[in-house]
Image (cartoon, rainbow, N blue to C red; front, side, top):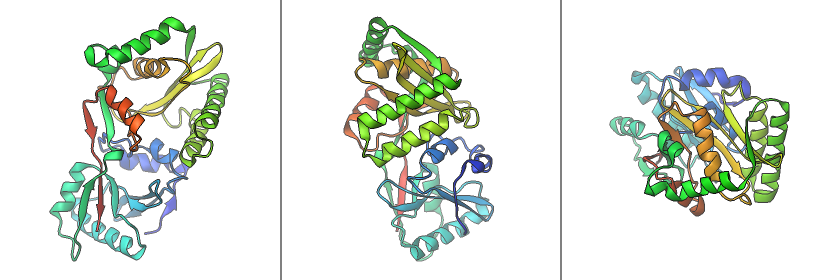
Length: 298
């Protein structure tokens, strides 16, 4: 296999392989891959007419994602080849980011001389929500979020704009840079995310993204970017807010979905990365399920 570094020019090819699937995971999106292409050294190759994506996690461990577009009769050979590549290149894992259905396929195939270990990757489970509930914020479970939303609406003279046009794009980039400086100037994850935000907002149509910016006193205090992965699901890739404005996250969360994704059933708000505070917030919106991801090693 000859691996190539992921570039913007690969979008059409990658999407051709991804679109036939109905993934609930945020990982299988060209936008997600592109955001982390540098930090995770994302590369791809074609083998037996299947797409093989290799990436590095935030701890520096290389692994493969789920093969895409393979023929069922070729899967055994593909797996054997990836196992061999893993061994020859001293990779810690064979796979990460695997869906449960693919785990069952691995179990059903006999891989010669390999004892495999499969474990759940809880820190990377995706949080899935009903779009309607995030819009309505009704019921006791979401009472706290509704209060935060109402406070923002009541206390601030705000304006919501779609992320389009030179002026709004420039304002969002300024807000992203400010957020980076204030929240993680020495954090490589936040740095690469900030770099990607600039490119995303300058190419909204190319990435098929929707986005909004929330202004207070002519300054962006929050913005969000997301896309439909299919007719039933949308993923929120980016959500940033200035917490000096109470209720700003409850406001942009509800408003973005209401404006841009009210026609889908499920909203994927990605993972918590094992960050305690982020996990608490994501659970407070009461997901309908956590989309599991698995690690395979040997």
